Structure formats: C-alpha cells, structure tokens
Length: 220
Image (cartoon, rainbow, N blue to C red; front, side, top):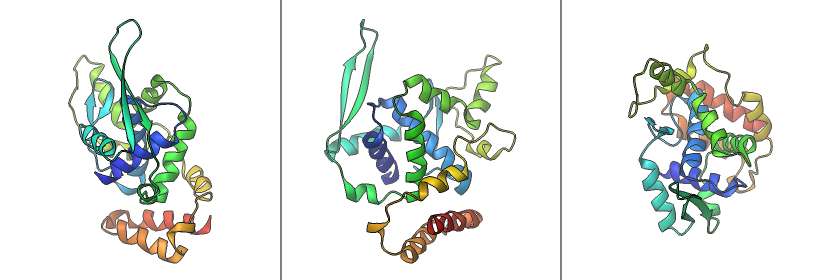
C-alpha cells in the first residue's frame, strides 16, 4: 500500500486546487492506466472496480487514514450548499521529502503530466478523463444495454488494445518531463538505473520496456 500512499500524498501536494475523494482516486487511476501500458500492472497495486463514480478500490480509505495518522494530510468534511449532501477535501499539513523520494521517477513524470492537464479543473474533468479509458469504456458499453455493472472488476488489459482511445500521455511527453528530474539526491545515474531495473526485474515480460524507460532518463 506504500505506493498508493506516496501518490495520494504527491497529488495532494502538487495540485493547486483542493482535491476531494473522487478526484484524488481518479488521478491515481489515470496514473495506474499509464503505468499499466508499459509495465502490465498498476503502480499503486490496486485492482479497480466499477463504483457509482467510476473506478475505485476501498484500499483508498486505508491509505488515506494512514496519511492522516502520520500527520501529513487532513481530510476536511463539509456540507454542500443547499444541504445536498456531504463532501470532503484534502489539505497538506506538512511535506515529507523522504516519502516523496521513494516515488519511482517515471511514476512522478506521469503524475506531473496529470497535474498539468487537470490543474484548476473541476470534478467533471477528472471523471471525463477516467471514463474515457479503455477499461471504463468497456463497462459503459455493457451498461448501454441496461445492465448495471457496479462492483465489476475493470479489465486493465484493455489498455493495451490498439483500437482503444488515444493514450492520455505519449512517450515523448514523458521523455520531455523526465529531463526535468532532479537526480541530485538519488546517487549516480549508474546506481539509480541499476536500482530501477532491479525493482522491475520481476516483471520479466516487460523488462524491455523498463530498460527503454531507464535509457530515456539517462539520455534526457
């Protein structure tokens, strides 16, 4: 769950607007979709299910509670104007460089692209991006026939369908943002690239993609 906590913290820290539960989980889902394209698994480790507001996993609550207990974030409840229900928004209480330094730099690049595309956007924009991903489009197609799919596991392998929608972020975008990485506190390029490869080596089927990403970071 540590990677989930990392990305929750990072998005809360980096977005200029206050995020609620739904917008935060959708930002993480978008990152997981992009990560899955290259590595065949989600960065957060979550398996997503169809919730009333799109992709979700209840593990989100555990990670949120953990960050609150660590004193890093605060979740502020509020009542919608007109008494239309209850909402929540997250505040960063303090920064934790050690936690942030654990984030894989490629994941951070993708996260920064998501922040750039959705800064100052409302909840509908987050939902729009999430609902336009291949796993959600597959479910929506079934629901068009009148069959509700609440609780259905999203088929993340659909992300690799070449007939699906255009990816939110292309490789060149990630390469460009990778060039801005501050590697000062991560040791030499040789040490860092070795660490990345070791962490991803268990994903042997995707090793070629991992090595290409490391090469991009080294050459940027």
